Image (tube, rainbow, N blue to C red):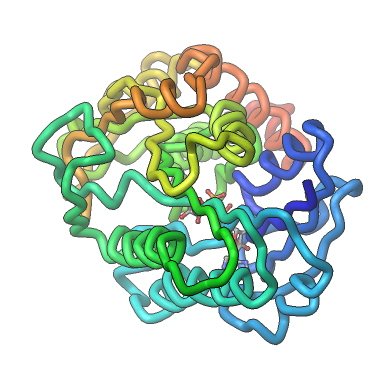
Length: 327
Ligand SMILES: NC(=O)c1ccc[n+]([C@@H]2O[C@H](COP(=O)([O-])OP(=O)(O)OC[C@H]3O[C@@H](n4cnc5c(N)ncnc54)[C@H](O)[C@@H]3O)[C@@H](O)[C@H]2O)c1
């Protein structure tokens, strides 16, 4: 298949691009480089700089014709969404609508959307099924939910004149090699790793008993790869999570242990707006429709992530890392 990956220079996008190439697809990437690094996009993929909110930048790419679009581009920070809600709305909702419009115009038959566990807000039932009501408190969750509804609703339009099949993949807390450990706005596991690498205390917001469901990035892209071609996925919303709850207190300890520092300093700061309390995916639907389940245990994934982060950190700060002053 000829596949366009938006946001393909970011954390998940790079892993997905690699996976789709390995699957034998022809892959094109667009990214506005706001949080991505085009140098990390595999050379076998064709790359163009472009902003999903600006159709004039992305339409020339669409003009080549695609069998599928994997719409990954997005603003991922809950904190930034509160501080600049209009930018978040533009990227996550308007950007998605623009991609849908281009798919309709160019008759792209398949569309996969990077949805999020944040949509559930504080779900009444945990582990959470896709049928639970979505009542996000975080602004980020609101704009991702609006994006998802545009996607699912467009997939049901009888007036398009062609078969447009869509799937929204509600990803839980994705982690793994390639996730920044220098970005305080995204990925709590990456943030804690960065704290340890730089010799700062790990800071937990709130009491740390809030839970998250961590899922390794290679398992996530395996889910995307299956969803791309699975007939049963068409028109569906599907959770992709690890299926296990880990508290932030447990996570902080696990990260410290993985760095070989079991007594590492952990501090607490006041809780933040939009924080979900209990998060855990019910992944029964992904098992049934995609024959998917995560293969990487949290312990294995954490080891691989920490090994990668150590290596990257050593490359970026060789003198400090080799003397151990910061580690
Ligand atoms: N990381 C997670 O745990 C997680 C969980 C659920 C959903 N998601 C969703 O998955 C997607 C990817 O997340 P990620 O963790 O890889 O984040 P990321 O920031 O590493 O990747 C997002 C990419 O999108 C690009 N981008 C942002 N705005 C753009 C725009 N207007 N036009 C073109 N490109 C743009 C960025 O430059 C970046 O390369 C996002 O849509 C996010 O909402 C992520």
